[in-house]
Each structure stands twice: as C-alpha cells, then as structure tokens.
Amino acid sequence: MAASRTWQRWLNLSLVVVGVLVVLYGAFVQGRGPETCRGVEMGPGDVCHKSSMSELHTTETQTYEQRKAAALAQRPTVIISGLVIAGFGLFLHRRTGAPRGVASAEEERLLSQH
Image (cartoon, rainbow, N blue to C red):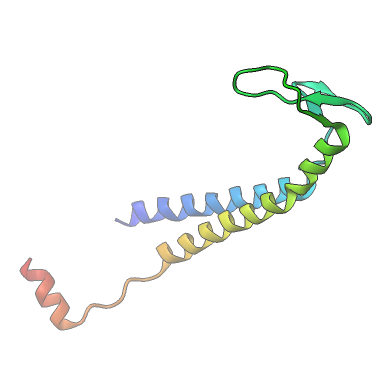
C-alpha cells in the first residue's frame, strides 16, 4: 500500500510541474513568436485566408495584426489554466500525504468482523 501511495504522490507532483510549465509557457512564450499562416511566417500587413473543415481557403481573412492580438489575448487563459492544473496537483499531493485517522476501538472491532 505504501508503494502505491508513493507513486501517487510522485504523479501528483508531476501534475504540479506540468501546471507550472503551462504557466511559464503562457507568460513567456504564448503570442511572442512569429505568426504563421499554414506554416508560412507572416509579417505586418500580411493576410491569411481562414480554412474550414471542407475548404482550404475561405473568403474570411485574418490580418497579421489580428492573429497577433488573438495570440496575446489567449495568454491569461493559458496562465489561469496552468494555475488550476498546478493547484489541483498540489491538492492531490497533500491529500495523498495526509495521515490516515486513528481508528477507534469500536471501528477496529467492526473492521475485524468483515
């Protein structure tokens, strides 16, 4: 039982690490790289035709500036998601590490009967 508990604690800590990495990505990477349109780097003034499930090019377009603004607008969502993931992992880590309550004599008697 102790070995599985140790594994649970390590897995929960890894969830905390993943959450922290998501926060760092949102804070320092999201929206800061070059904008691309289907793998082709865009520059100021460039336009990208949006695609749909059935068409590669639609009449709807998005400018470089719009794409950059959309990427920057997603940063708070990414950061908050990372904080939620890390917080949940920390909650699980603390919960699996909490010592089990001491059973009363009556509880011990009932448990031994079953």
